[in-house]
Amino acid sequence: AAIAFIVQFFLTLIAFGSGAPGGLFAPSLILGSCLGHIIGAFQEYLLHAGSPTTYALAGMGAFFSGVSKVPITAIVIVFEMTTDFNLVLPLMIGSVTSYLVADKLVPGSLYDKLLKLKGINIEYKTSTEGILTKLTAREVMQSRVESLDAEMSVEEAMQAFSRSHHRGFPVVDDSRLVGIVTQTDLLKAGDSPNQELDKSIIIKQMVLRQIMTPEPVTVTPYHNLSNVLYLLDRYKISRLPVVEGKRLIGIITRADIIRTEADHLNCENPEKPPTEPSYVVYQTRSPSIGRGRLLLPIANPDTAATLIKMAVAIARERHYEIECVQIILVPRYSSPAETQVRTTQSRRLLRQTEVLGKKWQIPIHTQIRVAHDVAQAILETISDRHIDILLMGWKGSTDTPGRIFGNVVDTVVRQATCEVMLVKLGTQHSRQEGEAPATPTSQHPAVSTEDSGIQFNNWLIPMAGGPNAWLAIKLLPALVTLGNEPKIRLTRVFHPSEVKPDMKVLEDAIRQIIRRRQLYTTVIAEAVKAESVSEGVINLVSKGHYDVVVLGASREGMLQQAIKGNIPEAIASGVESTVILVRGAINAE
Image 1 (cartoon, rainbow, N blue to C red):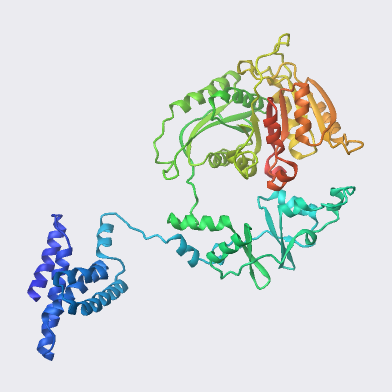
Image 2 (cartoon, rainbow, N blue to C red):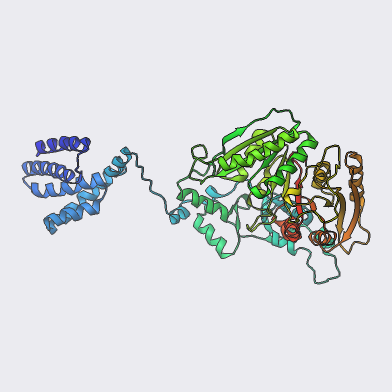
């Protein structure tokens, strides 16, 4: 038996190592039976008891169970060979003991090791149910919690919501959790059965303690995710504060749980970024002689020509260079640096920019980036190329829940450090009969846009005093060169309840325009009454046939959208004119 074991062991290594057809199932049974027979023979010789045959069969099952880590299969196979019920108990004891000892010493079966040698790595994923019971709230929660003080005024809370993307905040008093406030609470603030009371006056006198939800549902850091999900579903809420005693130490949301499940199911490290950096596959460079850089992402060939001419107009007036980028998307499972892409069509589109740049003697740089995400690629370009202003197209509406401008534009508006200019091109067509031909409106000749069928003659600029509206005034000298004898109207929309509208904003805007002597055009200022800003602007465009509406964009959150409505989207979708949104550099606000 010993000789058979040694010979079989080495012959198995030679046979398997040679790559010849064969297996390890039968050799493992033979090796196990030899070891079992040897032990049975010693038992019979020393104690004069036991049967070497029984030991050989039990050893066969135990050896196979230890090698393959399948104790039940080993018991069934050996029993089927013998059909001896007296063998079942020793087989069970031997196979299970062998499995436990082998798995403790060397986890994983022999077949897993052989697959790994061939480069095939099998990872056993934890089920969703296992994740929910294994992970605790402390492991998933956000430890950096934005909270509001209980004595904060409701007006200050509205500003905090506007600056954040959160839809609810914990309310604390001396670091102790006393309540929670949501956007719904703020929207209901000031509601009074007495209709004669002004809601805005009531809100000014209120503090968060009066409108918050006291004694909110909470969890401890030791609750598992199953308990957290049960509470979220039970009370129909989207977030749970995590407390130790009464002290707030974190907050956990449905999004945190979903992200954790996805990371575990995809075998990803939660700290690994979801996307890889974009990769430049093509670029051209011109002499760097400008005072700054304008970035122009080009995606739609139908609007590219007009956007290029707008970029040229701004670059000429500011003495900027133009950085033109085309972004090619690839699937997330593909690396941008290793994926092959075709750039012929993209290069053809970029050459339009180069041709126009040479005509106006403006430095044009072009590049093609391969990326997983358009917004991320734009932000990387802004950082890499030190961009001063971003000019990009915008479709004027979004169908994405929770977004104000759209997936890409929302991210860019909130995170881009440079000035941002979004353009939704209108649907106007060729010049009306009797209209004057193109004439210079500044020291530069006009950049014609007649071939695009889009007009830039009558400009409407609503002013509310925000910082981004003043950026529109600074851009006017460049933008009006796109039109034929352009006319500018500054307006302020005020509520009918206001007896005398404040015209100071419009007066300051006119003074700023007058200071820019190179801007020779007609400018008027007039206030208009309307129930809302969007309604007032849409009515003005409809009656005055304005070609372009310039608005100040912002990085405001969902609360502002819920209270006042999505003003830019409402205007852009409600008019056929071109709509331009401008937003100043973040570090300048």
